Amino acid sequence: MAETVCSEAPGRADVARLTALLAELDERNLDNVTRTESYLELYALTRAHPPDLPWLLMAHLVSRNAGSLMTDIAVLLDRGDGAIAPPALRELFLFLERANHLIFFDAWYHVLHHLLGRSADLAPGRCSRFVREAWARHEGARRAGQPHRALERALVRDLVTNEQNFIERRVVHHPRFPIARALVALAEALGQEAPVVLPCTQASIQVGGFAILERRIRAGMRIFEAMADRATRDAMYEWARRHPHDGSRPPCDGARGPARPRLRDAWPAHAVRALWDGIHAPPEPDPGWP
Image (cartoon, rainbow, N blue to C red; front, side, top):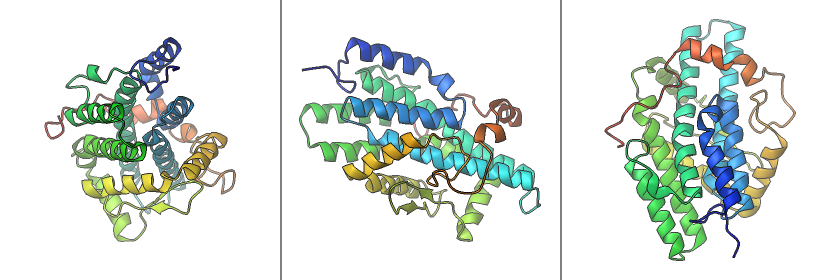
């Protein structure tokens, strides 16, 4: 039987490609655009060498929504109408960028180790104990022949749980972002929470309390349920391929909608780093999620 990317022992060509992708982590973590498109690229590889990993498509679509919010913040800053003070808007942008950056830093590393068949090499201090155990559990259950759909759902739940715990104290409740938290809570209280909009569905998913860990995890599983159907997932993937992400339009608006700046024009990487030199620093240790 031919080797596949997702096997415990990928073929030589697959090893070379996946190893190169792993080595590109820092380059691909430059900004929201590189992250968003990297998730889609890696998802495409798992589609070509099944089983696919739907969490990667979820990550692409959620990151696409985050990039659109980042562009919205730039538009508000340019408008300068005083409704929200510029320092508060910049902190909100940094809040989104830091979470986006840390999730990619974590996930790109451990997902590629899985695809390379090297999950046993995931070291304490680089990946949480939870995610190391999750991959071992998933790979063992797959070898035992457990049903695919149950395996897929369980893995998505584990990866969503890990990512949200990974940013829980490092971003969501970090003392660096009190104003950003207040702005998110205010938007929720006023019924203005930005939903996660998914292409090819009527789904428009709100967390309903971003500061609450369990609600973020439940929202992640609602995103998965919206794409659990194979035909819907395929349609989402084809839509994403046809519409490269640059933040210049709402996440599911295609070529329509009012003109907006491209994300990299609004927030070039050097300007982002000038806002806070710690924005792309390695994650702080978190005893609550070792």
